[in-house]
Image (cartoon, rainbow, N blue to C red; front, side):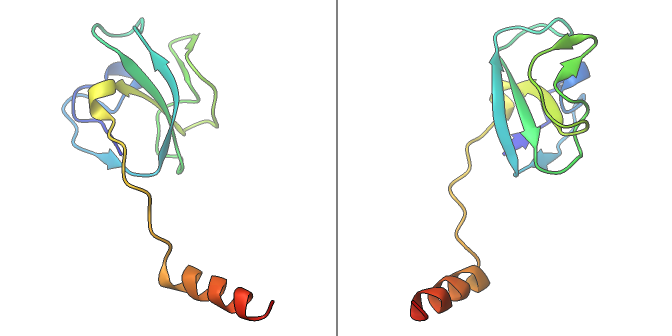
Length: 101
Protein backbone atom coordinates (compact mmCIF):
# COMPACT_ATOMS: atom_id res chain seq x y z
CA UNK A 1 0.00 0.00 0.00
CA UNK A 2 0.97 3.61 -0.37
CA UNK A 3 0.37 6.12 2.38
CA UNK A 4 0.48 9.88 2.30
CA UNK A 5 1.08 10.15 6.02
CA UNK A 6 4.62 11.49 6.04
CA UNK A 7 4.12 14.76 4.24
CA UNK A 8 4.89 13.83 0.68
CA UNK A 9 5.20 17.45 -0.42
CA UNK A 10 4.04 18.77 -3.75
CA UNK A 11 4.17 15.42 -5.52
CA UNK A 12 3.18 13.18 -2.66
CA UNK A 13 0.25 12.39 -0.50
CA UNK A 14 0.06 15.72 1.29
CA UNK A 15 1.16 17.09 4.63
CA UNK A 16 0.17 14.89 7.54
CA UNK A 17 -2.52 13.01 5.63
CA UNK A 18 -3.32 9.47 6.63
CA UNK A 19 -4.83 8.26 3.38
CA UNK A 20 -3.78 4.83 2.11
CA UNK A 21 -4.06 3.39 -1.40
CA UNK A 22 -3.78 -0.37 -1.78
CA UNK A 23 -3.94 -0.57 -5.56
CA UNK A 24 -0.70 0.97 -6.77
CA UNK A 25 2.38 0.02 -8.77
CA UNK A 26 5.90 1.27 -8.04
CA UNK A 27 7.07 3.00 -11.21
CA UNK A 28 10.31 4.72 -10.13
CA UNK A 29 12.76 4.94 -7.24
CA UNK A 30 14.02 8.51 -7.02
CA UNK A 31 17.01 9.36 -4.76
CA UNK A 32 16.00 13.02 -4.47
CA UNK A 33 13.32 15.37 -5.76
CA UNK A 34 13.42 19.08 -6.51
CA UNK A 35 10.31 19.93 -4.48
CA UNK A 36 11.29 18.55 -1.03
CA UNK A 37 14.28 17.42 1.02
CA UNK A 38 15.06 13.92 2.18
CA UNK A 39 14.57 10.72 0.35
CA UNK A 40 14.61 8.26 -1.17
CA UNK A 41 11.31 8.80 -2.94
CA UNK A 42 9.06 6.38 -4.80
CA UNK A 43 7.02 7.22 -7.88
CA UNK A 44 3.80 5.22 -7.83
CA UNK A 45 0.94 4.75 -10.26
CA UNK A 46 -2.49 4.37 -8.67
CA UNK A 47 -5.11 2.15 -10.29
CA UNK A 48 -7.80 4.81 -9.77
CA UNK A 49 -7.46 8.48 -10.82
CA UNK A 50 -7.02 9.79 -7.27
CA UNK A 51 -3.39 10.88 -7.64
CA UNK A 52 -1.98 14.35 -8.16
CA UNK A 53 -0.26 14.20 -11.56
CA UNK A 54 0.97 12.09 -14.48
CA UNK A 55 4.50 11.61 -13.12
CA UNK A 56 5.57 15.20 -13.79
CA UNK A 57 5.89 17.54 -10.80
CA UNK A 58 6.56 21.28 -11.28
CA UNK A 59 7.93 20.77 -14.77
CA UNK A 60 10.19 17.80 -13.98
CA UNK A 61 9.22 14.31 -15.13
CA UNK A 62 10.02 11.46 -12.74
CA UNK A 63 7.96 8.76 -14.53
CA UNK A 64 4.96 8.55 -16.88
CA UNK A 65 1.38 7.50 -16.23
CA UNK A 66 -2.17 8.59 -17.01
CA UNK A 67 -3.16 12.04 -15.67
CA UNK A 68 -4.34 11.90 -12.06
CA UNK A 69 -2.82 8.47 -11.39
CA UNK A 70 0.62 9.53 -10.11
CA UNK A 71 2.10 10.21 -6.69
CA UNK A 72 5.67 10.69 -5.50
CA UNK A 73 5.97 9.63 -1.85
CA UNK A 74 8.72 8.96 0.67
CA UNK A 75 9.96 5.37 0.47
CA UNK A 76 8.98 4.87 4.10
CA UNK A 77 5.32 5.43 3.09
CA UNK A 78 5.33 2.40 0.75
CA UNK A 79 4.56 -1.08 2.02
CA UNK A 80 4.39 -4.24 -0.06
CA UNK A 81 1.08 -5.98 0.45
CA UNK A 82 0.65 -9.75 0.28
CA UNK A 83 -0.79 -11.16 -2.91
CA UNK A 84 -4.55 -10.96 -3.00
CA UNK A 85 -6.61 -14.10 -2.96
CA UNK A 86 -9.01 -14.50 -5.82
CA UNK A 87 -12.58 -13.86 -4.90
CA UNK A 88 -14.97 -16.77 -4.54
CA UNK A 89 -16.67 -15.86 -7.82
CA UNK A 90 -13.32 -15.90 -9.65
CA UNK A 91 -12.50 -19.28 -8.14
CA UNK A 92 -15.94 -20.62 -9.07
CA UNK A 93 -15.52 -19.37 -12.64
CA UNK A 94 -12.09 -21.01 -12.91
CA UNK A 95 -13.51 -24.30 -11.59
CA UNK A 96 -16.39 -24.12 -14.06
CA UNK A 97 -14.01 -23.50 -16.99
CA UNK A 98 -11.84 -26.42 -15.89
CA UNK A 99 -14.86 -28.72 -15.58
CA UNK A 100 -15.89 -28.04 -19.20
CA UNK A 101 -12.48 -28.80 -20.70
